[in-house]
Each structure stands twice: as C-alpha cells, then as structure tokens.
Amino acid sequence: MSLMLRLLSISAATAILSFAATNAQVEKFIKRGLSSNPNIKVKSVEVVDKRALKNPKGWEAYFVNFKLSLQRGKKSFNINQNDILFANGNLIAPDLIDINTNRSLKKSLSPSIKPTIYNKEHLLYGNKDAKHKILVFSDPVCPFCKDYVPPLIDVAKKYPNTFALYYYHFPLTRIHPAAPIISKAMIVLQKNGKKDLIEKIYKTNFNFREKNETKILDELNKKLKTNLTLKDINREWVKKSLENDIENGNRLFVRGTPTVYFDSKKDPSISKYKKYIPKK
Image (cartoon, rainbow, N blue to C red; front, side):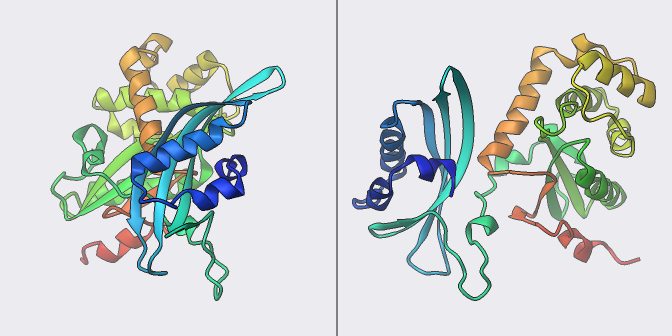
C-alpha cells in the first residue's frame, strides 16, 4: 500500500467520493486527511489526471501527486510521491487486481501525455513532424538505459521522418549519485550542438557511485575529450532545466528508467517502434 493510503485512514478513504467530487474537492479532502497527522506538513496535493476506465466499467482512476514534509524524531524528510486511487460511487480502492491474472491495474496506468511535452528543447533526433513520437525518461548511467536508449537514438537518426525521439533527464540519484552531474553536462552539450557526445555517454562507463562533482566532471572530460567546468554545468538555467525534466517525470508517475512512451502510450516493452521501422 502507498504512503498516502497508509497515512489516510480507511474511513477517510472510503468517504472520499461520498459527494459529487471534483478534482479540487478530492485534493482538499486528501490534504485534510494527511494534515490530521501532527507529524506531517502538507505542501501540496494535486490531481494531475483523471480517467474513466473501460474495464471495469463504472470506475475512475485519480492520479494524485502530493508533496509533504514528514517529521520523524528530530529529522524531517521531504516527500514527493504519486499515487493512483480507484473510485466507483461511494467506494474507493488503493488498487484493482485482475482475479484471472493476479496483475495490478495500477501498474499498467499512467497519466495522459500533454502535447507540450513534445517541444523542440527535448527533441534529440528525428523531425518534429515525424510519423511517430518516442518519449524517453532516462538516467545516463543506468545499465538498462545503456541497453535500450542507444537503439532509440540510432533509429531516430536513421529514419528521421518516421521517428522523433524526445529525451528527458531522470537521474536516479539515490542509486546513481553521479547521474545528476552527468545529466547537467548532457544538457550543456546538447545546447552547444554536441548531441553526438550524448550518444557517446551511453556507450561509456562512468563511476556512477562517485559523489564528488569535480571527480565526476574530470572523468567525463577525460573520456569525452571535453573541457566542461563546474561553472558551466551549474548555471541557473542548467539546474532549472534538469529540475523541470524531473518534475515532468514525477507528474507522469515515472518510477524507474528507462520509461518509454510510443505515440503517447506507455511502452513497457520498449519495442513497439520496431514494428514501424521502414522496410528496406
């Protein structure tokens, strides 16, 4: 069960839609439920999307993002978390499980993609008017990303009228401390028209456990033959760009990398594009 539903009482959860609920009413109710815990300071609650389910009929999925500060002893923790609630009339459930497959419906859903996410700042390769759009949230030192992202780059480069590849940075800082620094370097490189080095980063091994910015940047400069400085990658616009990418990922409930969408639909297989590769 998610943190939010642990914090909300069962009685509160089951009452959440006992009235004609709008997004604002749901947000207000959840905020009130979380605030009842004296160790919690609620910063924001937002329903980022709502969707009527085709199956089971009559149910709706509410995609909720909430930010709060949790006090445990003398320590305070900032939490930014997403959750999906399922509602049908006066009933609400933390998840819906398919009785035949034992699969969670929650894991197969994600908020809708807004058209604004496909912008020129994030178009890595391909033409903006290409037949198909590939959207990827990636961590440059994630081993799975190193397997899956280079083929996406290759296909968008080779067939620019068929595929447009939109790239968003989503460094997994907890397990890859070096990822945010390398991501910021990638932002600068792309801005300077050196997209080829972004591809090279995915084919280069880095010490992803390193936390020292200077050592990480020195390693990157040595292996890529660049001369980026800490000042270059820590300019305000670079940090803001990375923060915006991460925020976009959070709003889409991105939990791991690589997370890929094909024509605005989540593609867990990361292979749907293969069906549309032009035949020679």
